[in-house]
Length: 285
Ligand code: ATR
Image (cartoon, rainbow, N blue to C red; front, side, top):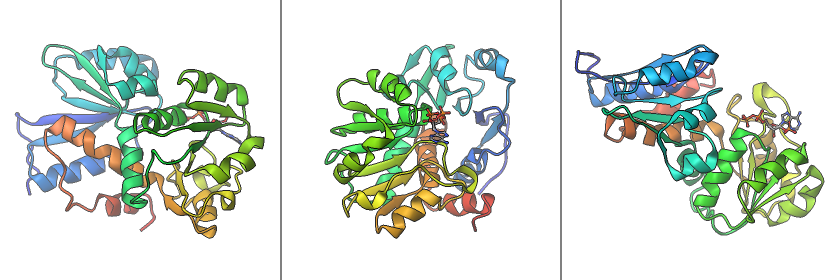
C-alpha cells in the first residue's frame, strides 16, 4: 500500500456539475491505494458553459482520462474525435480518454456496468432470451437500450409517461425497439425477462414507476437504476413479488471497473470492498 503521489503520477478524474456527491473518487482512490499505484483520481466541476474549454485544455494527456457525469455526457460525446460503438449508440459518453497527440476518445462504460450488475446479482440471466421493458425515455434509458441491443436483446419496449418521447427514442434505434404508453404494461410484463426503471421515480425515497411486477414471469429480473435509497420502493415491490433484483449501486460500481482499466492500465483489485465503502458513504451501512 502506498499513498505517495510523485511528479510521475498518472492523473485521472471525474467531471460533473455539481460533483461534490460523486462516489467515483472514493472508489478509484481505494483501488489506487490497494495497488500501490503512483496515481490520483480527482473531482472537477467546470462551470456548465465552460465544459468544452475544460476538455480542450486536457488535450495532450496531462490528465489520462476523466469520467463524465451529469450534465455533460452528451457534450462529452460531441467533443470527442473518436467514439466507441456503444457511446455512439447511447448518444452519450461517461469516459473521455486523452492521447498524447491531442486526440480525445469517448467511451461508455455505463453499458458494461448495467450488464455487469445483472451478471453479479442475477447470475444466469440471459439477455438474449426474452424481451426487455425499459421504463423511461431519457438519457439513462437510451444508454441502457444501447447496451441491451449490443448484448443481443431480442426486443426492447420503451414505456414512458410521455409517449412521444418514447417514440423519438425508439426511432433512433430501429425495429427492435418499440415505443409504448403505460397502458401497454399489462400486456408487456407477462412476456418480459427484464424490467428496468430508467425514470427518476423513487429517487430520494418516493414511489417508483407504476407497473404491476407480479405480472412478470417468475424468473424475471427487475433492475432499478436509482440507487438512493439502495432498496427503492420499486425493488421492494419486485422482492415482494418474489422476483430477482439488481440495484443501481452495483451498476455504478461495475462501470468503474473498465474505467479504471482504461485510465490506469490494469484491472482493479477484487479484494477491495468498494461496495462496502460506497454503502458507508450513502449512509446505508
Ligand atoms: P435522465 O437523463 O436521467 O434519463 P431525464 O432525461 O430527465 O433524465 O428523464 C427522466 C425520465 O423519468 C423520463 O422518462 C420521464 O418521463 P417523461 O418523459 O414523461 O417526462 C420520467 N419521469 C420523471 N418524473 C416522472 C413522473 N412523475 N411520472 C412518470 N415518469 C416520470
